[in-house]
Every structure is written in C-alpha cells, then in structure tokens.
Image 1: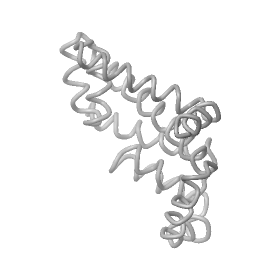
Image 2: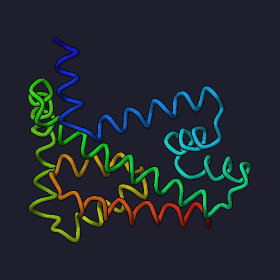
Image 3: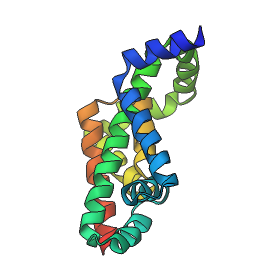
Length: 167
C-alpha cells in the first residue's frame, strides 16, 4: 500500500521525482568524489563561500562558481516550492500542513494584509540574503505567494548574496 501511495505521489509530482534523482546523483557523485557533485553538495550545505573555494580549486573563476551556485539554489527553490504545493494536496500530508499553516496564521496575515506586495518582496529578498533560499521558500509557502513573484524575490536575494560573496 505504501509503495502505491509513493508511486502515485511521484506520478502527480514530477518535480519530486527529478529532485530525488538529482539528490541521488549528488550522493553517488559525492561518494565517487566527482567534482561537480562535491561542488553542489558544498553549495547546498555552505552557501556561497565553500563552493567558491572549491570551484577555484577545480579551475573555476569565483564569478563562475557564484553563477553555478545561483543556478543550483534557484533549482532547489523552485523544486521545493513545487513539492510543497503538491504535498499540500496529498491526503496524508494535508492535515499536517493545514495545522502548520494554522500555527503560522499571524505570519500569513502580516504578509497578506500589512506588508503589501512591495513589502512582501522586500521580506523575501531579505530572508534569502540573510538566511538562505530555504527560509524564503517556507515563508512563500506559508503566505501562499505566487510562484513567479516568489522566485523573483529569491533571485534578487541570491544575487545580492552572491555579490557580497564576491566582494
């Protein structure tokens, strides 16, 4: 029964399948010490600093390492948003996600009522810049923001972080 539920979830959410394949390749590549896999793992774990150092060791210029990190972070942000939105429709996760959103109702109210569109964009940029892409994804999911709007805020925050890392 569990295998059928997983199979249906993977069929409904192709981004989950692609992300699981990506992470599996990274795990195998990390064990085999493949340069890009280690670079991507360092980016996921340590933000910009570790991949820039490792990228220079691989022969990449620092700005190329930042551009690759930007691509990895944008991919992970988009895929996590897609996965969370698909899980929200899944029968078993629906109650848990509903209680989580109920717990963070004040944050949702702040985003939708008080912050406005420009303020919400600024909060996404700041959250991405200060804490990372994952916090902006969680905030956008809780506040039920549009995908393009969320990805724009995450992109601007990541670019600011990348410029600071190059600084």
